[in-house]
Length: 405
Image (spheres, rainbow, N blue to C red):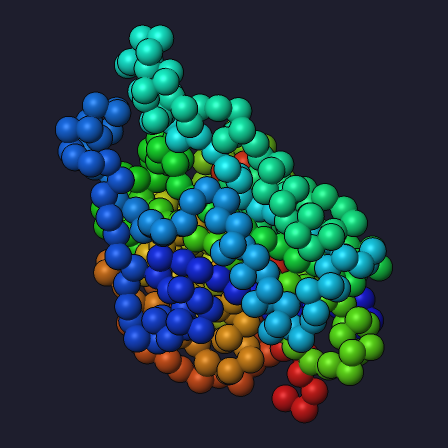
């Protein structure tokens, strides 16, 4: 148990909620995130290759890197864990950045090709933004490393939807194999026009109706957001005279990215990862209070995941909590947000039902909770799953290890 990976702290800032406390409160109140149009008009959207305008959930007051915000979220997570900021300078610490860091918006390139007179280089703001300084993926890592005097430069991981979960998986492995005692995962998810282009090519923006596992949903509610999650070894916590907490045990599989849209193959691999994570944690399906799936409203991945859940559950009814139609899909950081919700579900022994707006597909209808408010439970385990278009599949078993509970 010394090398167990325990969630010690977390923080978030989303369009849905400014912090993790408000995240839980807004879910309980049944609130929905507000959406705004990405393009200035329908005409501009059509000119850019879309059938109509696309609506997202945005953080308008943040820039690409939002360093002050990331510093605040990092320090909020450390404060929750009762750790001094100076602890990040230790040799037993690993920090991971997830997301894609500062980038130029694809619209700037489009402006360049539409207006390529030499004088535009001095006059057009969009062209000025094409400078290489605004395309550095490592600049964010450098700032954070200097700020907290890190001994190792944080790697920047971009694994599409599973970016943060992949870093968390690596962090759990590092702790379990005595390679680290403290792991900090930082996510920044800022939307650019090219992200919307990409989702459109993946048929993930086909409907304005968004409902995970919905009969008529064929799209996601794309959202921005920033978040952090802090893992700590049980050994390190005990040395600080802290016990208990929520443990994470993870399993990972990588399939060909070209087969991530193969529903049958994807479903088989999701099931295998779910079973692997459960076996590693020595937990049975009957012991789960809930499953928090990837479920984001995209038809192909949702149907594959639904089939895996149905086979996994067998004759049991396991509550499935899918929130991304309500609070938005913060692509590279959605894993952290789901783990924050899962942490609340275990530590407070309550399940918060998402609000829904569509009928649930038959294969998983008996499991998916919608519009049922808050219900109590008495179980100690929860399963989280993640899927990425890069072919990554991740399962994480969360376990409440608080003594006497």
